[in-house]
Length: 85
Image (spheres, rainbow, N blue to C red):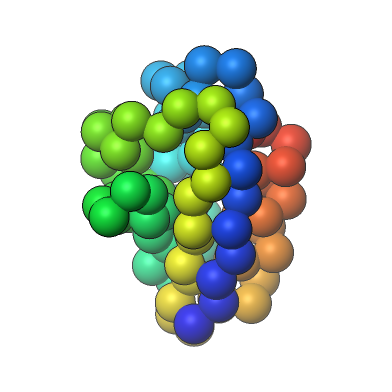
């Protein structure tokens, strides 16, 4: 299992547009990608679940990646967050 933390920089937090992009990106990988925030978790490929976390700007999330392509998926997701959130 791979894991990293990321502080959300988007001024509105994780809202519909970036959550949609995130879900689309997460679906590219076989690994299970989860976002953990404030005691809750959501699979990154499930748009409504990600939005339901209510992550605001300046908050830190933990992302876990587990599966056959976790090395590749973890790096790609970390890059995705840096570029989009």
